[in-house]
Image 1 (cartoon, rainbow, N blue to C red):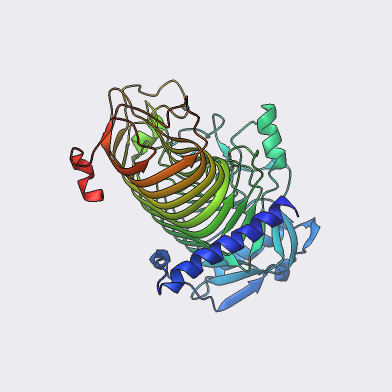
Image 2: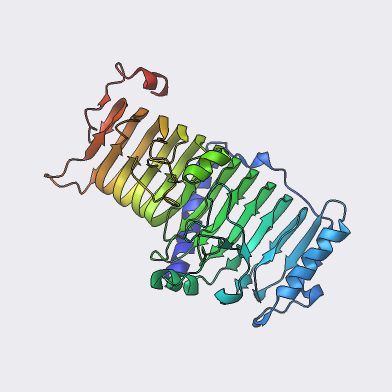
Length: 448
């Protein structure tokens, strides 16, 4: 059985088990209502515009003409663009407002493998340059800027970035600009992404940046474990984002909440807030649930719950650095199961690189109010590491009902802490002395 097929089967089993558990108790908590479901009366097919799903014909003209038609005819209630079964090879393309991109079962939208003619876009202002290389960046494969009311959905069709050529360029050091994301929305709102398989992204998979009211549900995201920087979902300087009921197996963080990079993110000043991550399952050599390390605009009010992680580098990773500035506050992670993980919990103030040498080393991050509770791990090599900054200690770190056991050797301390304060109760193995009892940790009293 191939790794991909095994991953999809495991995804289906775990998601169905999670849903059945919640439904059996008569409820299914969801945040998906922040964006209403859209029904489009007007429907067109990519084949109406000459689309051919033979895996060889270039369909860029068909996609661009179909979307041009949607944009300019402006049918009441918007238009659904139907992609029937088949493999549709295409260059990158832009979506438009008030549209649904609908992939039938067996439909594959596949990126060309031609980096030399890939279009460029300007760097994001909160990053100041491309994330990997100075200057601009390659446009995402499927892109949207300044849009409203957009849906990408279907019957678990596939969007395939064919990222291998990009991964090799990264490994060889031959990239001219930052690799393209698979799907990116910029300055957009009212976005739904559901019931689609995302495969082999050149870089980050799904990247909503400067967006609001975004729902990502019932998606499967797959990339080889050695594929560089293939983050699953990265909400970035965005608010009211709902991520639920999904399976992610990639080469980097499964979900990572971001908000800009050093002096550029500080100047742009747009935080990520009101982010919900619920019923996500997956594996990664890096982090399962992450905040950062690009947090210069601030990250607040994040809830992650009912998470299942296996074969993962770090279960929960909150990361920042000197020069980042910004804040990380009111973060709650609960109801997590992890198996075969190198480090269960890591909160660090020394992670990530800088865009240039203009960052301010005195711009220190403010970290206060991180609650981790009801976390169970087996085959965990190291329970945790919580290391703040000497001149900006991490405060209000609240741990409760955490059991992380497995492979910690007798000569290796299960926890490593410095420049941190907070409290712990019912944590095994017992954490470091810097985390006092709840009676002494007043900032945590309301969280226990």
